[in-house]
Image 1 (cartoon, rainbow, N blue to C red):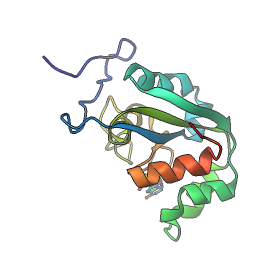
Image 2: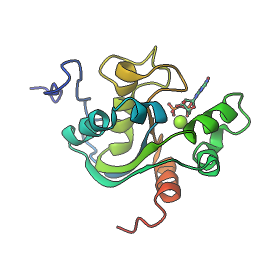
Image 3: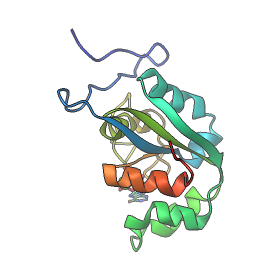
Length: 161
Ligand code: IDP
Ligand code: MG
């Protein structure tokens, strides 16, 4: 018996094996569909992958974020050569911000997103299937519990449940 199941919609999509199988943790994580994902009509496809993989949508928002908020989001990258372009891009057009909840949500969402560079991301991951280049890689997913808490609080200030 395997815990990897095929999606009914995308035959290439493999639901990832749960991380740390013995240690199931109900977690929340922050995700953002980047501008080209919204522009290309991929909101439903991306949210659907998380829903079909058993995650619950806790909060969801379509908005054009301010440059200031984009800078806060990517604070750890301030000073890097791609920082200005990245925050300009992220605040240039609408994005979808969301909080999802489920077992090992942080690590599983990172696995479903795929590695940062879409050229290197595996088929079946969101970036592997839809990413264009390293900046336009479709989705953001928090990389740790600390980042998830921080990112949820800056994008959903009033999330009190
Ligand atoms: P991650 O999104 O996989 O966590 P990070 O290294 O935290 O990747 O970078 C944050 C975002 O910054 C990436 O998703 C990507 O959009 C952008 N980025 C990272 N490295 C580069 C680069 O070398 N050139 C342009 N954009 C980059
Ligand atoms: Mg990151």
